[in-house]
Image (cartoon, rainbow, N blue to C red; front, side, top):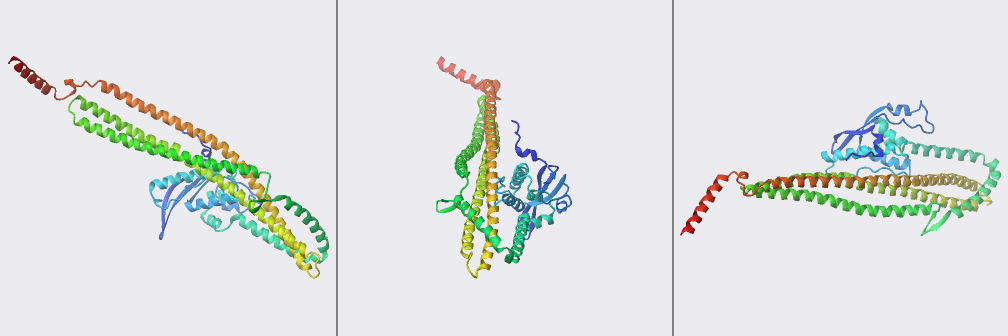
Amino acid sequence: MSERNRPEDAAQYITVSDPVQHSEGMNKYTSYRVDVRGGPPIPQHDGASDNNAHSNVFQNPGYSAVLRRFNDFLWLYERLREERAGAIVPPLPEKQPVGRFSAAFIEDRRKNLERFLRRVAVHPELQDTICLNTFLRADDATFSAAKQSNWEVGVSSVQQQQSNNINAQQQQQQHSLSQKKESNKLTQWLTSTSTSIASTVMTVGNADLVRSPDDDLFEEIERYINGLDSQMKVVSQQASALVRKGKEMANGLFEFGLAFSLLGQSEADALGLALQKMGDTADTLSVMTAEHAERESSEFEDPIQDYIRMIKAVKAAVDKRNEKRRHYTNCLNDLSHKQSQANKLKGVPGKEEKSYMADMALLQTQEETERAREDFATVSQRVLREVDRFKREKADDMRATVMDYIQLQIEYNQNMEGVWANLIPQLEQVQIGDPKNTGQGSSTNVDSSVVASSSSGVTGE
């Protein structure tokens, strides 16, 4: 059975190899070499140019080699979730507190880390992220600095805050000249905002959450994902039970064959030879069944468990959308509160300065609310695209997994039938009681003559 192609196979230019254990005092960890040989070009982002800082951060886009540890992969995973909120980020291998330095565990983790990177590299929502290229190509100093900072998200926030402060100062200096004009604009804007808030926020349970036209669709998605998760966990349990029974069957056939071999050794004639052939056949079937159980584990049980981890990733993407929804709702509530404060101070003698500051705070909150609205809409659309892609790709993947499992069972049963069928003519050639099939044929003839003579003597008398 030939191994089928998977989407991540398109990123075979990324490899994870050469795990090396390190010790720093009481701390032990394993590093992995991450190589990039070719691949897509480094993405250009807003404000980037050929002569900017990125040219010093990244190595030759045609080839790079860096050392990364598991915590670095965790950093990349979390940055992807923040940088592209709502995307289905491929799962990382789970942590293991015991036995994490065994050769088998390290090799299994290496394979899974490589698969994680390749999946991200071909992911339509993640493949052009800055954090991915930082992880793959940045030198140690640059990567360490990126991990210690909030990367570009933090820089953008600081720049935005500085811009807001400068604008507020400039506007305050011009307060005496533009207060009346600004007041008229604010009155018009506050009226439209009040109407917008009233039509956007609805009561959901005990909390006020913003509603969107896609909410019913997302509720259906959540029901679908939760149901799929429950069903796949049942399938996983049954798959694990099948693999476990297969291993038990292999052990049973081994014990069965050993028993027949020992029984054959206790028989000195052709029957003993036949019993030993039966024992040898059972031993062959034991090895075959053990290998089959291992293939069931890697080609059926493991893909099912990976499917469950992907479902968990879908849930995390939907949760990100819910998180953005709550943030947008909080911004709307804050906007309503500041609108109320501004209205109370407006036109009150002696409160002109406070009224102006309240108006400025209201404008800043309106800008923040607009960003939250855009972020919520962007994440919502991304989740919809991702869930649609998940359904299509995983349906194909599940179909292929089931077909591979069926083919695996056909091959195994055909091989089992062949081994049993080959035993039948071997046993048919063994003639029980034939002197040629035992090394004690002469002794048997002598004993038969003695018995015959004794019988004749008794008859004569």
